[in-house]
Length: 453
Length: 178
Image (tube, rainbow over all chains, first blue to last red; front, side, top):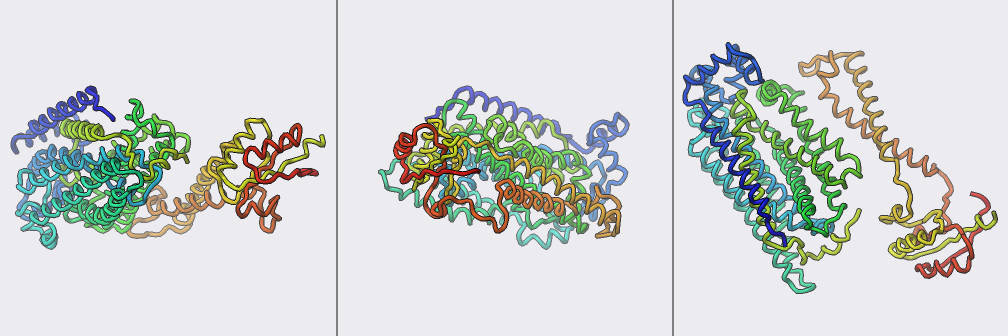
């Protein structure tokens, strides 16, 4: 049995409190009204030009209708209906910023839990022989989808009740002037949107709750009785079908709809690759952490090696999807599609290409060598980079649509990351401490203990 | 020198028994020349103490060759020799049109790595078409495992030891020359 160390509790607590304070300051620091933004822009215009955002403000001022009115903010409607000043756009963007930051961080940690759940279901459905020694770690991490899912749903509710304006299609004023969004209201309307989110979250949590229960019951079963194991297999197979459909729709709803004019047919896969690689990386990190504390003595180098192989492989898979999406849109150069990348390349150049380097080149070079995949600190280093890289990946999926060029990684971004990170750590390790670390009832346990490649 | 040309051909019928036998034989400091198996046995090369393959390093280098070939080729075809304007993207610069060439660069990297790796493997294993098999016993292609060991010391004593490791039959072979 693992007991949650007070050190870890304090650490998670500090993360949460510091993150919360930073996030609250992020909200307080928002400009109070339009006049303040105008003043701010005035100052920046005459002051020193340093930092990407300053330069972007200036570019945008010269040509605000093109850069801001249509691409960055994602709402042509405003441009059509009434002329909006540049300052007004920036004001809206800055108001959106802390909300978007919270949303990105909340989604990031939620998707780690969901990715691990999918990975776990695959292990169960494939009747994998190598991984049962890691099942309790996977169960622990995936348990985060309960609090994480509740947080996500609350955030969606906040948007749905117009307490923030990060989803532009929820604004009736915008929809009234936008024919493209009008054509999508059959799908993109608030009641249906919330109903979908609720159905998906309930479905995923139901499976997680069941499979955890089956796993614990199997531990208590008599020798040779694998009824709970078989039940888990059936549930996992059914869940995977449910998951891949709902995950895809979730990615359109929760991320792609930030740019309601734009669409990509492989977006669901792309988000899935992101959550899968982040999830597997987290399994490796938690496993290595627990091993370093003297637990999980039955996990050997070959298990770590296999996890690192998955980290490597899925990172390549993610890059493949990223590039497929990028190249088709770049090559065809259709105005309504290509704006997505124009915004990212113009306003987010460093983060956009930087995160591709972190998520592709870094794992490729570090984890290519077979021996390195068995060295814990190599896996941890690569893992930390992968996690940061995929946070940035979600960041550049969301931010360009909500805050446009007024982005910055500052108080609310780092703060909300720490805050949800604290909740995540506490909840995950708390769940891990609730059950023995070895799923001793699993019929493949012996094979898993002796696993070596 | 006559004794050193003598080999024992030791047969086993199970891969786990074989794996244990290999470890025991090596502990006794007998030299295992080769092991013939009907299928790849996991952990065998480690137990035999064979150095890791350098094929992976070759594969990486071959991949780089493929990447270089693809880059040079596409640069010549699409940029230098006959630049075209495709999709509003005039081909004046390799770098600016690079995304379009990535699939080719990727495929040729894989192509070169894969094919040259197979050819290297054949050369290194001294295999070529119509080569006569060097298999000492056809049963090793079905369900038997054969360990070829250099004779050292007393043959009788060595054979007894081999039977103790689980061997099913032992043959003494006098190899002329290798």
